[in-house]
Length: 424
Image 1 (spheres, rainbow, N blue to C red):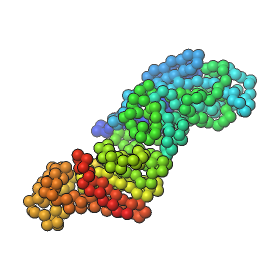
Image 2 (image 1 turned 90 degrees about the horizontal axis):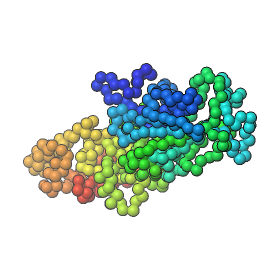
Image 3 (image 1 turned 90 degrees about the vertical axis):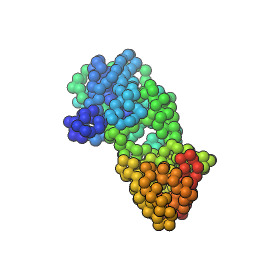
Image 4 (image 1 turned 30 degrees about the horizontal axis):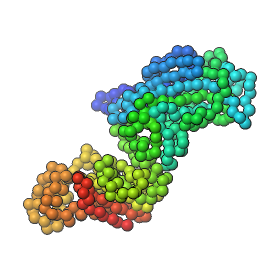
């Protein structure tokens, strides 16, 4: 996308890009700061993305009082099926003088700051920024994520964007008039989950509290609960943009889950292709910790390579027959649209095993892998089912190379275990 092309624009035949929750939060905060400076709520702000160019973001609402200004943005996920699409993200901004015990602060100006050529009353305009996770923003409780436990679930990318945009907003105006603080009371760190950003000690503080009114409800439809992010959604975005059906986004999710697993002491991870296959694996392994289970969808090879890179000693694949067939055929990505099911190789395996020609023809003519499995089970051809499972394990072994054990649990669609194949 060129710098002049809006994220919400659509080229003919192309899916529409959107912007991340991180971009929405930064846009709301920047709008609230401009509202504080200028006395009027902007209808749009240009957010500087981490890539260096600007994205115009519409401002949905805003308000001000003696204690704070606030603005909100409606998150636009473009054509990506994101659960946060349409969610309101609010930034409440307060500018306060800092008086923290043990850090001396010049008391020459408790009530106003004047911006002159990048300085405030001759001093740095780089305030300390206190980013607070308000209602609907999750709190990290487990290690392994890019945010340490106890902090609000605002990823490093949005944190960097927040710092850059708020500092830039302070300097964008040529006005040199006084800017009153929101309150005369000195600032002290809040009790809510927060993170301090900037260059301490800092003589004043911009306190930004991010809220997502529907965040706690939306989080139940994300991976946050299993990752140990409680109470709301995460504020995400490496680039600031949302690309529809992004492989990159799903790969980042897999990396995050694997990182949490390793940080919580899991040396072997269970890679399932979805919710049902994970459910069956959880029942099979009983007391295994929940962090050990990672849903990888169609990213078979990527997840094995990442598990190896992160130092896992073993992986267990939990799959149904269709995915196992594609794995055995050497497909590193197993989505149906990318690699359509070819049952010819399974029929050839049937013929090599001296099974009746009618059975082999029936398999080759099956509409789906599920139908092919029903044919095999009805004929009692469990040797072919086992051969597929062994082929999938061999393919995983080639990807993992040495130093990691491979195991595969092949489930029937009703949850019955058909094969358990191991290769140390």
